[in-house]
Structures are given as structure tokens and as C-alpha cells.
Image (cartoon, rainbow, N blue to C red; front, side, top):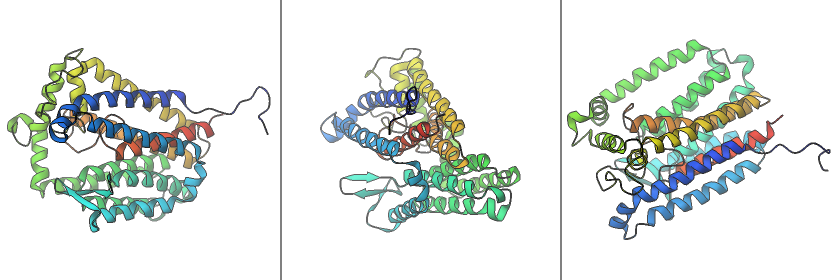
Length: 370
């Protein structure tokens, strides 16, 4: 049956989609620029990593289109299967031959020719769970045992499995999602304040009792004190950002990617962008992120029920927290945490997860439209 004359089916959020696609296109350009020399030197062709990134983006677009078209109720009905699947993936990373140790940590699953980081699945599963939980426990959300303890324990389970890898940054990310969605879900502020205090104390103790984390903390406070060792990556990031000026040295003409800046095409790609495209190029990235922030709030406020509001805010938070943390690390405002820049940094897991979140937001924007 067709819609009545003069009425049309609500469309997806065009500004959100346009901002994400522009950010992705800019990311592809910068991945090619930042990775070409490294790929040619180590893999025999400067196009290898760029072609892989194109493949990841293609998979991400398919994930986005699936999330756009599958009814949101499908995800709501199968929340605990998502949680179970995410937990299984994290356990397999730790206790199976599929889990591979890279750089002293087991954070990746190798499935044939592909690698996947289960953290991205855990972020989505936690958002789905928190939306489901708070929408059904509103009458008891102010109590500790019913309204706050269950989501705290669920998040703690995810964080425990991440810390065993170890992945301190991933645990902080999930804790931030919990805090934000608990605040929106109606949790009492005294519970949130106490949990934040305990988390800060626990984080400090973890840093103090880990020589590696302690060195990174001191390097973050004064990277130039040990510029050739623990502060090396951050110092090289500063050199790249500082040499770019207003307009940059030119696309492809940067020096920091010439084996000076580690992870130039990954976590520190904004430093390469700042060097080659300058303040103007970085401002474009931040402007696109601001558009995503605006549309996430707009979509969230349009939702008709609490679960969908939490889903919209949670999916948006996965993208926006990633952008905030990555930018803060590159600018020296936070210790290095291994958080990629959404849609810009090289990598498949965060691209798939980010596009899935965008697909959910687009789905909710259409269903939540007046």
C-alpha cells in the first residue's frame, strides 16, 4: 500500500552520511600518502596497504547498508546473543590458536587471511545491552542492586577480558561508554561519582604497578625528557604538526612518514595530515566530526522511546569517543592508547565497527523521523 498523497517515507539522515563519506574519502587519501613508502619498502608495492584499506571500506559500506535496512527491533530482540558472541570472541583471543600476540598483547583474531579486533564487537554489544537494560529497569534505575550493579558487572566482565590481553585503552573506552549511558539512563549521580573515583584509583594503581605504563605516563607528561625512547612517538608527532603551519608542506611531501613516526598511517595519521595539509586540513577533519556530533544529538532527541535514544547516543559515542581520544593522543593531551581515528586511520576492525554504528544511526534517523 502506497503512502497517502503529499506524504513520503522519512529518508535517512543525509548530513550524517555525507560527513562520514567525506571523512572516509579524506582518510583514504591520507592512508595512501602515509603508508606508500612503508608499504613499498616492506611489502614490495606502495599500493598494498591502500588497497587493503579500500577493501575494508567496501566491507564497511556493506555493514552500514545492512544495519540501515535490518529493523532495529531485530537487534533489540537479540541483545544477549550479541553480548555472548562478543564475550566468546574476547575469550578466543586469549585462549585459542586464533588469537595472535602482536607487540606483547593478544588483541587480534586471525580468521584465514583476515584479522579482527574483538574490542569493536564488545563496544557495540555493550551499547545494545545498556539500551535494553535501562529501558526495562526505569522503575528501579535509582537503586544500586537492580539499577546500577548489573550494567557495572557486565562492563567489568568485558574490561577484565580486555585487561588480560592487555588492553588498558580499550577498558577505558568501555568504561566511558558505561558512564555516559548510565548518566542518560537515569543512574543516580552518587553511584556514578563513586564508580569514577574507584576507576581512577584503580587506573593509577595499574599504572604504578606496571613499569611499561609508568614510563608511558611520564613520557606523556614530558616527552622531550626521553625523546629517543619512551617519548619518541609523541615528539615526532609534535614535529609533524609543528612543521605543517597553516597550509601544510603539501600532500605527499611530509617527512615524518619516512620511518620517523611509528604508526604514521594508523593511530598517528592526524600528525601526518597536520604536516602535509596543515591547520586547514586538520580543521576540515574536526569540522566533519562536529557535523557527526550535531547529527548524533539530533537523531537521539528525535527517538520516541528510551531504548532507541540510548542506542542512538551509544552508537554515536563509539565514533565520537574514538575521535576525541585519538585527537587528544596526537595533540599530547593524553598518553598514547592505541585508539585509531574513526574512518581515517588504517585498519579493518574500526572501519567495520564505525560503519555499522553509522548504519544504526541512519536506521534510527529514518524510524525516528516525525
